[in-house]
Image (cartoon, rainbow, N blue to C red; front, side):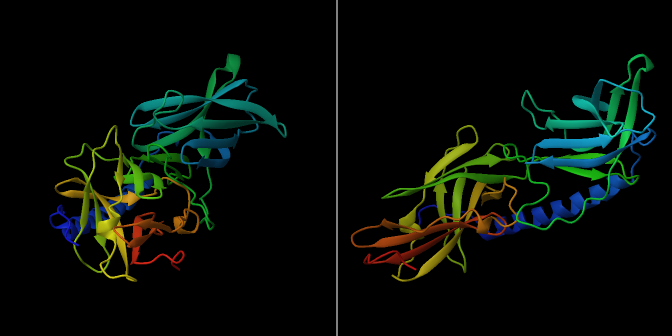
Length: 328
């Protein structure tokens, strides 16, 4: 197997990718600690008890809060977000619950026309209630520490389209905050399409700057030459035919597992896989059946794409010479 195109120093680029990711995680932790210690611009407002503060499905903010007992009756309310002098608002629903005013909010986050476009950073969250002649009253939101989550889904998945992350939290004073971070640079699989004679993969870039001579790179586990497939993205989307003849091992009965990467420039690679979901372990849900496809003559390949625990795409290929059933 001697593919005509190879990635220069692929192992070095992949090591750099891993180092950047680890450095980014450390930076995120440090930033979060600093944010918890900074002054909260809503800290001086009277508190309202917020018993539900979460972002579901990666983009829908849900808030439920009960106002103090002495709050005047009101028909209108808004939730507001404050960060470095900027303020954004969205409407809330007001109703009575057990003799007190309660406020409920369901808001979509993102950059579409019907979504709230919060920029990167940490936003303090509060409530504004229109009490008629008494004017507007503003409240901070007290929230409890989020408990550790255990189950098949994660508590804060990324936005399913943009890949941005909206993470509810609390300040050092226990007040509601929403931290917004941009998408990690990755290539998101859209479809694994397997026909009778070939296999195709459709994907799109997420959080990736303009590319220079992009290509998909298959790297064999255990060492060996990479297989490189040039791609031509259109509007950040791309599609390519899996080079099964190059990925299949030379000897029948042998299986090789390939890690899938995308080279976005001469000095950068990103992972190809499924990342924009709420699954704790995508291996148990995003499962793909093995397919048998023909090579030259009486040669066949058992093609089995799958996702790792981190969501990275890997491809297992098994060569055999005579088809007597699906290989085990």
